[in-house]
Amino acid sequence: MSGSHTIGVIRGDGTGPEVVNEALKVMESVREGFEVALVEFDLGAERYLRTGETLPDDELARMRTCDAILLGAVGDPRVKPGVLERDLLLRARFQLDQYVNLRPVVRYPGVKTLVPSHSEEDVNFVVVRENSEGLYSGAGGFHRKGTEHEVAVQESINTRHGVERIVRYAFDLARTRRRKLTLVHKTNVLTFAGDLYQRVVDEVGAADYADVETDYVHVDAACIYFLDWPARFDVIVTDNMFGDIITDLGAMIQGGMGIAAGGNINPIGVSMFEPIGGTAPDHTGKGTINPLAAIGAAEMLLRQLGETDAAARIDRGIRVATQKMASMRAGEMGMSTSEVGDLVVEGAAR
Ligand code: IPM
Ligand code: MN
Image 1 (spheres, helix red, strand yellow):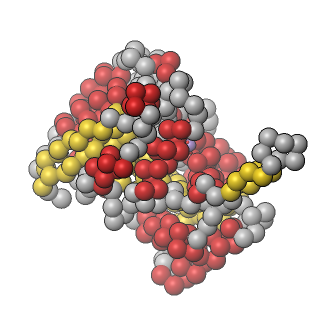
Image 2 (cartoon, rainbow, N blue to C red):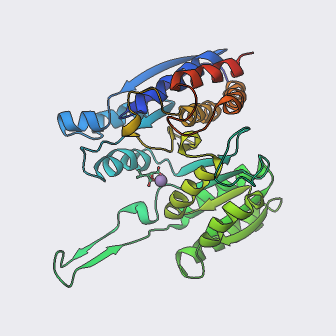
């Protein structure tokens, strides 16, 4: 694609600004044949502590005018847990209807993980996490709160429409890869939600994706396979909560949160890309945080915008960097945050 892309930038809190700097530096280095206009957003804990605002409507409206958004990280020990998560991050995902949470699980060359027996070929799959409903819908409530007879209900909302669109997205993705789609759920216990997912996979698969092989794995067994036989996976489709949990395990078999990138995708709207890890307060301002997850998020962003050549160059750059770094862990990389960025730039050069 050519032309100009308007990219929203939420640097956020903690180490967010440092990793976003490196991602933008890398993006600029591979920019060829297209323009980028950056639109800055002042969102996160600092703004909240200053003004009490998390994601005001006018900022949301500005987000809608972007072609894509790059997010560093939001959060701060001074803010009550849940506020920024729910009112900023989840609100953005829901309001922009970013119904796909796309999380590649890729083992880059030279990366040591907690599972030394894994080879690079073993760990190369994608988790397609439903991102707009399930247990994240916020449905439920308290009865008799604070009493001995308190009841807390947290409902998992699963709509046919919501399940079908995520399943179709996953099938389409599988078609661009090894043509294998695995449903991960807990159908032996969650007999309503799991049943809906299974039926949709079966029906949609038979009707429109006969060329894609499908299978099913319980979420607990999937955790075993991540460690024991990750090569069995190509594309996984799963619900919001299970997807949240298994992608942290997925990050660990990639080499840690420092290199795990993800995208909150609305295929016909504005998508938002982010490193999966948090704000890492212990590393803030020290130049010790690993920027590769944010750089990977920038790669995904460019791919989503159709800039596949620039994205492929970033991938090449990341693969050069991982072979030269001592570790993927913050503070143990054997080099600084910006030196990692420099290595990616070098590796991505023509
Ligand atoms: C993630 C995070 C979020 C989630 C939190 C911060 C709300 O854990 O992106 O995986 O649960 O989706
Ligand atoms: Mn998570």
